[in-house]
Image 1 (cartoon, rainbow, N blue to C red):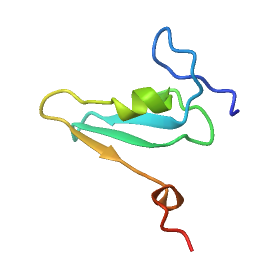
Image 2 (cartoon, rainbow, N blue to C red):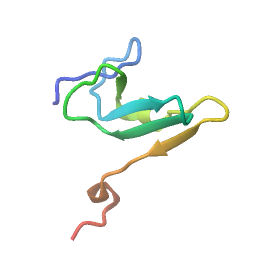
Image 3 (cartoon, rainbow, N blue to C red):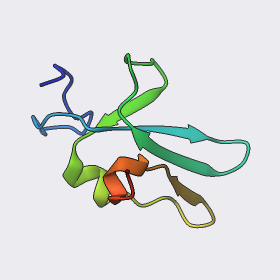
Image 4 (cartoon, helix red, strand yellow):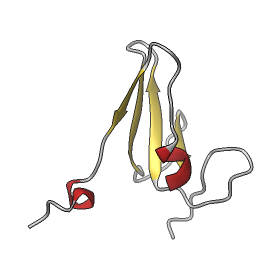
Length: 73
């Protein structure tokens, strides 16, 4: 366990992803859990990361680790 919990209210699940917003470009960027907590980002559990949606007109960019895709050597 990494010791960090999901940022969603009333969710006590372990965080597995980090969400950041780029307001200037209307982007929500979701990637693997960051090494350390950043003050302007949100840690999400698997359930909330999967269900993530962005406001109308925004794009969601999802970064995945290649090993998670089963493409490793």
